[in-house]
Length: 406
Ligand code: HEM
Image (tube, rainbow, N blue to C red; front, side, top):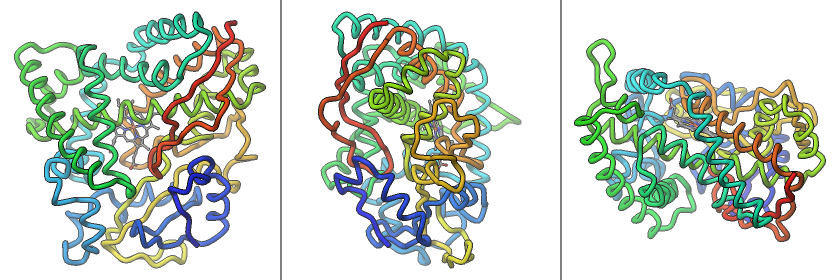
């Protein structure tokens, strides 16, 4: 069993391939050095099983890990990226993960996700005013990107003029998560991390001097039982929040608009059922999952449902496939905005479950609620949109659509 994640046909529509993979046992892929799991029960089971982890360094001696895989995950040629991106808490395991996540959650909880809704709504309305005047928009840059960026800028207290630089850094940094990353892109990821870290260090110094009610100030102040975040931990956490907080949400909104443009009946249904907005957002997250694949290290020798796994190796969890598993979801390839039984894995599961899920849900409710209220029809795109060439991030680079006002 195998698949080519960079085949244009797979990038356009990976779901038939995933169906084929689910019908077969888990398989090892040489290029990624991963044993891939595609079924819902396996993906959710492994996410919650502590014999797997996002870090390996605390549990397995380095000599026992395949040097190629180790180098792909912790590339010594890109030391700043490895130190600040790979050592952010999403890539740590207990006790380091527990410690930092606790402090971060404390900082996050200081302002409720709902308090961002009014700002988001203002942004979404302003964006749609312009789009409706023109009768069209490029949905990624004109709508899907500015909403999460406004939210993140609010959350972290970042001046509006700095946002384009943050987007460029964030795009450059995440390329190194993908197997298809070129040498030049990797160099760029390292450079972007350095620049981003300098920017964040300045921001931290400023907030230490003049604290506000933003997340950066809260992270600086975060202290539980005498424990605080170190300077590297603060920088890493801010970069993680910026990247995680906007990359996935842009794609979640973009994929959702594409799905609704292709299914006018579903969009009409959403327009006449505003009370179902929350359920519809969950279905859009399931239907075309923005983050399609996450990895876990195997921390001890074990057998998973008949598949032997050796410690120090890695597994790949195909979230996009799990969300379309016919064993778990009724009629999984159908976009059903009223789907009530929908325990999708788009925000993960277990100890790394997305910290930003409540915020992401508010952003998506505002984005799709505003579209449903103010737009009668979304038309296009006329040609197949170009896909981001990644197995991890699923999204389109641009999405030109025509809008008919309600
Ligand atoms: C639709 C948008 C989003 C999606 C689909 C998403 C998805 C995910 C997933 C799947 C994970 C777990 C990864 C794993 O288990 O290996 C995760 C973790 C995380 N997400 Fe999100 N996310 C979104 C939005 C956000 C936002 C808005 C923020 C912050 C403002 C955020 C911050 C984080 C952080 C900090 C983690 C790491 C948690 C940990 O390791 O304990 N995410 N996200």
